[in-house]
Amino acid sequence: HNMCLLSKKLETEMHLGDESLYAPYIRFLNKQAKGQIPATWSNDARDILRELLPEEIDGLSNGVDWIDDHFKGSCISPFDAFQEHIVALVKQRCYDDALIPLWDMVNHANGPHINTNTTSWYDNGGIKVWASQLIREGEEVFASYDGCVDCSTTAREWGTLEILRDFGFVEGYPHRYIYEDEDIWFEVVEVDKENDSLAVLWDDHINWEDGERFGAPDREGIEFLRSEVEEYEYLDKLIEERDSLNVTPFEWSVIMQTKEVVVKDFILAIEEAELVLGMRGSNDDFVQTADGSICAREF
Picture 1: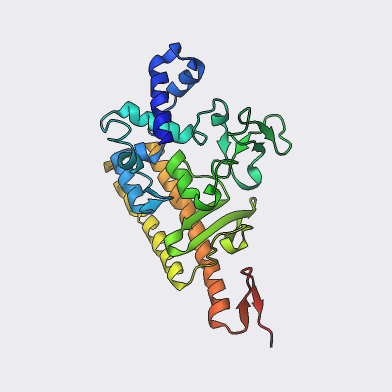
Picture 2: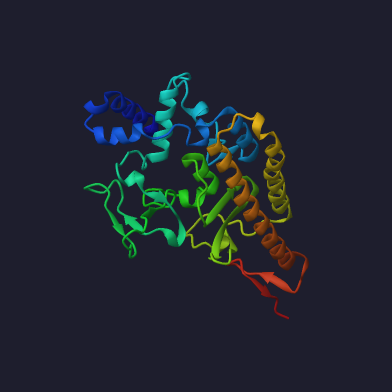
């Protein structure tokens, strides 16, 4: 509801143009390219992602149909491309229920790359931003799009595919994947960037105060991850058909980047899950403790 109201407000200001109280910001937004997020991609590109993304992501229909399903006909006209672009801009750039010029130009990162902190948008005096670590001249400023002060539980419920859905890019490490129906939640983190060394963290190693933890997936969960890898690998067959598809170079680049990181991350997760399953299941010499660690059984 708030996003719809904000979209209508932005549309009014966009029509005012230089007469808007926010004219400099409106001029900036008018320069933003259309088709940046998957929900506004070409039909062929959206068809490809429908085969890859979960049917439901964070309570919304898959990553390509949420504008059609939740906004067209109720908030915007089903046939107005400009209004669709407005909704996409708001989704990309809004902070909770507001657009904050300048702050919405800061790029996303998670893990050790974040170098800012903020107060809540709802504090008296509005949001305040400061450096959380030394930022040298020329270094980029980063903020988390899913781990902010006002982001509530998104750090637990959003992951790499949600970032793709809402912002149209594949985030850098750490990557996070959530499949609640399959009891799967894990992160892939960089251990050594120079040597491309990665590690898998299951949710039972995350310091949460409450909430259900799944731990490493069981055999059924592992097979689910294998099936997801197979879904992404079908893209190799589409390379030969690329010239016949109405997919822009930008869309194709993001799709193939998604395939590359998801397959890499999932294969690593499968290997780690197989190791944990072998240790805690068939081998009676080992036992899994309450914190998820694997230890030798006492005799």
